[in-house]
Every structure is written in C-alpha cells, then in structure tokens.
Length: 509
Image (cartoon, rainbow, N blue to C red; front, side):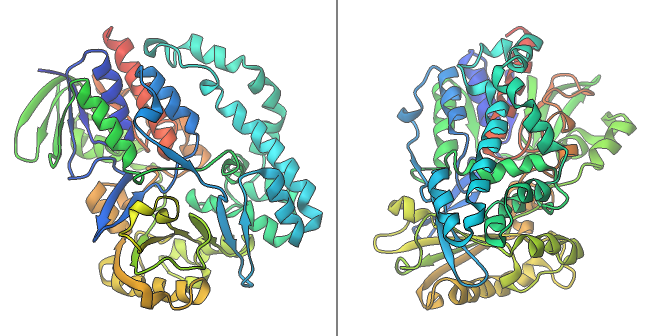
C-alpha cells in the first residue's frame, strides 16, 4: 500500500510529492497525460518549443524557499532569466513604449507621453509595493518546518509582522475600491491607465468591477518577471526529478476515474484501465469541481456541499495561438508584447462581447504576443523563431464551436499580427497550432478551460476557495489552482505546501 497517491502532476501535485517523499513516504503520482506540469508545461511543434498555460514566473523568492525546504539549491535545478524590459506596450494609435522593470525608469517613459502622471505612477508603485510586501511576509524569512506551516502560531507570527501592520491603512484604501478607482487615484492619461489596467484581463473581470487589490498585479512586473531556460516545462521537469530521486513513482498516461470512498474515507483510486490502487492518503491536484462531483461522486457528498461546489464561478479560459517562424521579426523587441484597448473599451469588452459569447474584431481583443525564443534562442530551431499569441475568448461561442472556429481564428490572428505589429508576418509562418478553451478542457481536464481554476475575484480567493483538507471526506486533500489561495504558479505551489503540511500534521508524519 502507498502512503500517498497524488492525482495530477501540476505544480501543486508535484510540490506535495516532493515534500512528502522527502519525509520518507511512499508516494505514487498518477498523471493522465503524456506531459508533466498541467498549466505550467511546454510542448514541441516541429522544433519550436511553446508554453502551455503559464508564460513567465513572478514571486521568484517562493521557489527558492521551496528548494530550501527540500534541502536543495534552486540554481542546481533551474536557471531563470530576468525579463527586462518587462513588456512592449502597443497603443491603439500605433505608438509603443518599452516598459522597463525599474519603476523610476518606467516613470521617465510615462513622462514622455503623460508628464502629469509621472509622480502618480511612482506613488502607485510605492503603495502597491507596500501591499505586496505585506502579502508575502511568509517568504521574507526561511519557512518554518513543514509540520508548523500554517498553524495558528505561524499565522499569528505573520500577522504580527511590522510590514503587515504598517500596510493596513494602504490595504484598506485599496480593498474598499475597484481596481479602476484605485488606478484613477494615481493617473489620468489614457496611455498611463492602459499600462496599469491591462493585467486585470488575467482575472477575467472588468477593472471597474474587480476589487482594488488586483491593482497590485500591474506593479508585480516591476518586482521581476522571470523565464526558466528551456521553457516553463523546465519547472515541473525539475520537480519530477526531485520526486523520483526521493523514491516517488510517477506513472504517465494514467487517468484516475474514481476516488474510492469507504465509510466516508478516501482509501484509494481506480484508474482508466480498471486498476484499483489503495493508499492511506489521496491528494487531488485536479480541479476541485471534478474532484468532488466526478471522482468522489455526489453520492458521497452532503447535498449542501455538492451545491456549494457547483456554484463556484470558473475562471476565464485563455486561447493561445502558436506560430513557428522562418526568422526573427525585427519588430519584436522583447519577450512580451501587449496589445490592449484603453481601459474604458476593455471594461466594455467583458459585457458587450465576452458575456454574450461573441468575439469582437481582433483589434478589439486584449492580447499578448509571447516570444520565448527572444529570451532563450534554443526554444526555436537555429535561425528560426517561436511566437505565441495569448488572448481572451469565452468557452461557449454564440455562433460557432471552437473546433469549427479554430482554423479561422488562427488565420485572423496571423492577419492581425501582420497589420498591427509585423508587416509580412504571414510569409514568415511555417508552422501553426492553437489551444482553444475546449482543447484545454480536453487535454488538461480544466472545466471549461478555466486556467485559474476559479474566478480570480474576492469571493473566490483565499479561504473562500475549497480547502486543502476536505471537510467532508477523511484522508482526502486538494492542491492546485482551484484551491486556497488561488490560481497562478506561485499560489499553486503555496497550495501544495499547505496541503502537505495538513497531511503531515493530521497523520503524525
């Protein structure tokens, strides 16, 4: 019998496998696909390497702390490059600016087209840094031993942090407003507001409705965006190597179809081939909704709990188009190029198009061009170039299915890039591919392609998300984007650390 069965090799599942196998536990990790990492992965298209889901890393300190917990050195396993400039902002009028990582240098850039917003930008950065530093007090010092992580004493120690106490007035001012109101407190110019507004598209909620705490997202690039050499898949590959070194057994192409429940306790799993495997603990890194409703089954859940799980709001999907090019376009100046409408138009997009299942003109879609081979030339064949387009689109289209619309969307994307950024782009394209919201659902088992699990809104963040320890099934634990604290690779790693800590305490390991 295994001590732990981990369902899924996303970052949350791999974090648990690493931490528990380090403590000498017999761990089996079952991955339904041929690729590690879930939404933090890479795949090959005729020698061009592209990322599936996550496109860069923030909160790099967390990865170092995790490796310290494992008794390892981060740089021995993963090398990362800093993205600076953090992005190339393309405005609707055809102008563009390179946005540096350094906030003061960015202030100088803003002053070139909005001199009245220079000081407002710097004040914005000071306040958002205060909020961010308060939110990451847990990584300012080495983590406590795993069995103490998340205990009342640990939480009280974090709450007593001077950084957190000093930040309370700023935090209150931010969380009692919308992101749009917070942004407009500091800046007035449309271009400057575009710079501090576009990242809310990752939350999938208009800036004029989402809580002001999400204004921090627009500051985080100035803390540092990082990219792992070899692509985002280098992270799960390194974590899987550590797990195997500590004795974890990893089986690929092994879907789990059922979690076995006996007398209200999780006791094992059944695989797609009908194999029954038993364990003392089951850790699901699958989305919480299918974990409970499909793998556990409604018959084992209190009716009220099942309804609560059904009523969670899913996060947005994010269609991604991939192009293998014959050469590097001279118009590409950095890893990430942003093309978004001004804030008022971006707010209207969600109500007028997204909520109605409609796709506007390509020019009216929020988009990012991701060029990993700018940072790591090995991600494309010699002399060639890898380019991806990240955008938004509803899971349910009003007049199409994604399978039917996919070829047209790829062609529209290529034409748009040619018009807006890279003249002659279509002649450079040698390979093309796409992941639609439906593809993400099929390949990664993400309900409706929800890349962040649940909606990134205050009612669906932190303790309002499903807990690491199941409240209704003994010996069942959860980690991943749909659990506390939220979506995104760093938060998913935190969920894995907390789930592991719960397991260790509950079982005296």
